[in-house]
Image 1 (cartoon, rainbow, N blue to C red):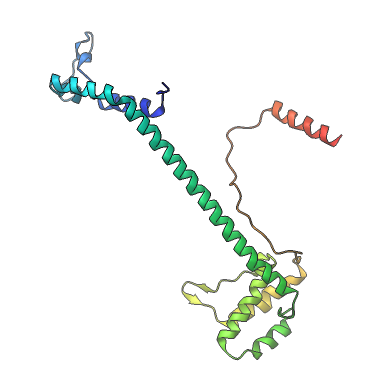
Image 2: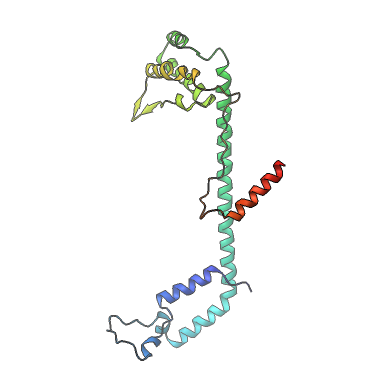
Amino acid sequence: MGWGALSRAAAQGQSRYNGDFYNGVDELISGRNGKSNEESRSIGVFHKLPTNLQDSLLATAKETVEHTHRNHIKALTCQREYRAQKREDLQEKKATASQQKFKEASWLHQQYHSPRCWKTSKQACKEFKKLGSHTQQLKYTKEQILIRYLGLGWEKAYHPWLRDKYTFTAMELLEHLVNTVIPLETSETVPKEAPYHMPRIPDMKKMGITSSDVQNYYKNRLSQKIN
């Protein structure tokens, strides 16, 4: 009937560990060392019940075994489907977030090739002074940093907006832009497109090493494709 399941084996092991059906037969085996009353194993809870309750319990178990088994399988199936749906929703959420980040990065990448981008330190200081308020200075200086960091994927251009509850000022970000970000033009490559990071399956750890037969098989397959 397909009742062999891990849950049944676990239930048997649990009942044996708890001694639910232990009837003291071990104490009747001769040749064993005597044990004190504290060390002797107590009678299982099943044998502490009156005989009529034992019979009723066994009869009920036999009567409901099929129904209980079906409910158990149904519950496991629902649990697997829920976990699978949860993983699917999480993957969809990550994909949507990646698409949104790519849209932002694409816009920033376009701004690098537009007059909006401050290409030299002299231009950056000049445009910075034209801005009327600290709010505008902060906004446009952040944008210049993000153009390189997100739009071009230059990791070295990164700078936090705050650290240890301290918010960096527009002037401090301008210093980072002038001294660190803009000089990256000489060492970094400008990509043709904005970087796109799609969520992928994590690297799984492998046990053991690949046998020489498997390695030779893949080498032969590779040589056949080349030839």
